[in-house]
Length: 277
Image 1 (cartoon, rainbow, N blue to C red):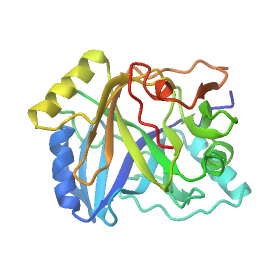
Image 2 (cartoon, rainbow, N blue to C red):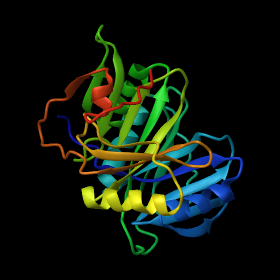
Image 3 (cartoon, rainbow, N blue to C red):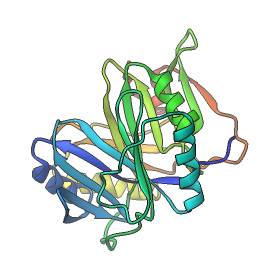
């Protein structure tokens, strides 16, 4: 296993034709504080933030990964320059130190920076920190190569079809099984974003919380094969998938990337799986 990127998914910015309504929904659904940061509506808790801006539904404006060490940020910047990858000025208002933006082959904007930090006190009730984001794409392999070979994410697992083609890839930025994943699909888009609860009991508490708000579970409870995590999904008003996960696999140093068959059981060891392609 190559040296880890040593970054965490700190915040994401989601576009909507009604960002105010969407931020109000997330504040209630994910039990977060509401704020306004520059041109963004914002909800935050557990030191991780969601930003909302005017734009196209079911589109992520950018995802942002935070480094604690300046040396790790500098190593990333060097890799991007050596690969002639696009480098732009970061647009997130969260960064308190150095930051930059690049884009994957599908045009998804990803930002890396230093010292995003915790910005809001925790609230009572179940916890679930922002943990990973997943993109759907028409062509997995070039997107995977960008994040793995240029950005420095580590490969955790592949999902392969009967001919050995890659249908999904799971990549890590620290010891957790994945902080980013890419799924083969009919279109390029945001697939879902995920929040990590502490254990099975807290996942249950989230399901009870959603029931109290009249929100139906769209998928789960279940258990993924890659990552071995427990999960459930709901939809936001724009149709974006939100995952609450628990007990995600922690990777040991030197672990060989896994291979999974492209079938329902890989996506849900307990039952129905939602295949993207």
